[in-house]
Image 1 (tube, rainbow, N blue to C red):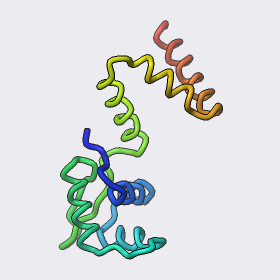
Image 2 (cartoon, rainbow, N blue to C red):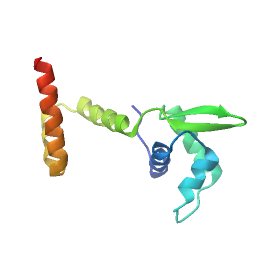
Image 3 (cartoon, one colour):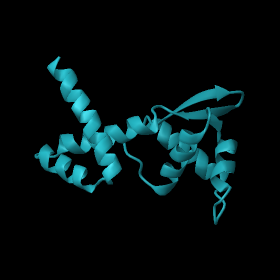
Image 4 (cartoon, rainbow, N blue to C red):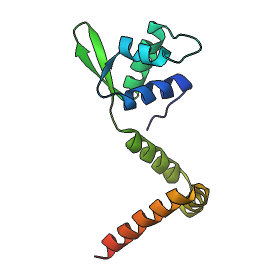
Length: 125
């Protein structure tokens, strides 16, 4: 799976994940520039959105003469894919999982433990 290569790619994905629906480049640009120290150019955002579409991160749909962009998967699905990619590439899954479990805040560890207990219970049935 292709990852996000830079901060602009991450920013574009963050805006689109938060958006209620697909956005045109102009809408995306306006949201990106709302709190930016330096305004981004339309062509820059369009180029990066196209790159994300080529990577399979965004879907583009025709809207008149322009395109609207939307994520192909939810933020949570993307994060899970990244985590699974890391595990797949590692020779010792247990060490990574243990380190992860030790690194998350206690409330996240409790939630993870609840989900794992439910999963283990479901597997026994």
